[in-house]
Image 1: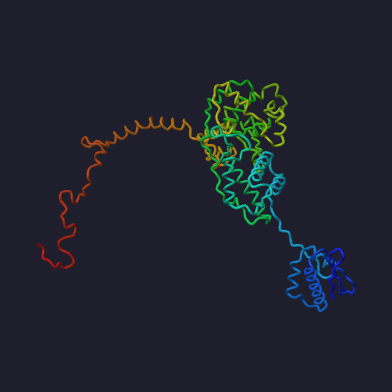
Image 2: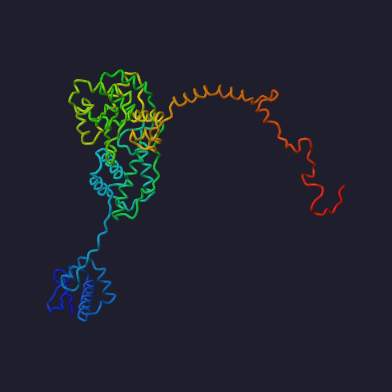
Length: 461
């Protein structure tokens, strides 16, 4: 039997003899009398069922299941029940900690790529919040996030017209959405979220034709002519005529990359090295060879390892040696050279030099050869590099002007259009008449003969 006893300080306790014969006490604290009596009755039921080795009745089992952890622990201490097993904690992917952890684990990426990934993590946390459960983000919210990137995701800079924070460019948005999909796909593979809300998200078109600009060779030669720096002369020539990626590829060139005998240059490619293409071989074009020779025979470069030695002597080259090329800051000096040469700056200074090189080379060599030299694919070249220039239009018009007189003369020699003073065009406008009916008019009854296979009920008139 269990006895329910009230203490002097208005607290309650239950005294009973356990199955082992020892006296036990359950202290309930200050609770209503009815609640204490209810606990006492259930304790008696638990003891009786345990002594008889029978399961608890539904009412007592339900009461025990709904009991708080604190009171259940008191029953366990008294030897009445087994310890309550804590429910298995379901892992939850919180976007802030998970994205930070994912970025920290990507030690396989180059520093520039890790910088881009850091911007993606900042955007995700800035839009969804640090403590948002990734499993609750829907595809519709992913669409909203994409629109936010295009309107107000930049950390600095405002539109000159509206004064509002500018959005990111379509190419940058596309790259960041790809990274978002990668982060969420990692959470799916770890079975932390059921699906990826960024999977199948339509990305903006990365090609911006308005920023593509063809730089004629004469323009870059004018810029080369006004700079006395031999390294800058070579840098501009390599960028415009061979399409090197500036700054990573020309700053990685060493003198042992030059094959003087065969006129070839081995280009180290830090960008594609991770994909198993650490270098490519290109021809030393006549436009580049004089600038390369000038540096090679310069006494100051005797015994130097890198071709662009002086430009690499800056502090920014130290981070470049570790694979981070963003701090080279060649743009400002090129802008000064353009100003001295009286040339209006064009968008994406070095990228458009590379694109102009590929456009020129594609007109002289097969496209698969040109892509091998520049280290990209035909699809990428078609979307981001190859351009239609004024030279294409001018050449088409000049060739047409050369061919047209010969075509007209050949037509006259063949007698085409000489038909009694009527031209061939006028001849074609005449009505076509079948030879069998040239002299006869078609009768109103059609082509059928008067004598039909079917018997005619009416006599012919």
